[in-house]
Length: 122
Image (cartoon, rainbow, N blue to C red; front, side):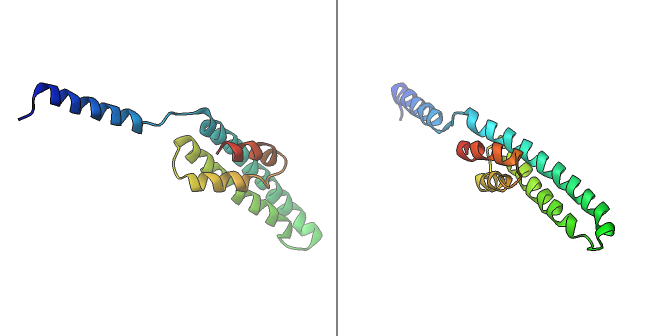
């Protein structure tokens, strides 16, 4: 049979183990998530503008939708960056977070300027 002293020792050891498993919430993933979301929004907006401009210019240049292709690529990069930023704020799926931060780098100039420190923060 357990004595009162043994029961309190077990309870204290469980409390210590629970305290060790709790991770501290730091500012770096939050900052990285916010900056990555900003880069992703810029990428989607810039991609939409380039795609629309390419659609307007393609009948004039008679080359089809070739001018719209870079815009579509920027929209794709921006969406991945947005999703990565959301998961950075949630502190889950770190592989997708890192992918989003790296794919935000080609979104010049905002994605590049914000993407370098974000990659360091992650």
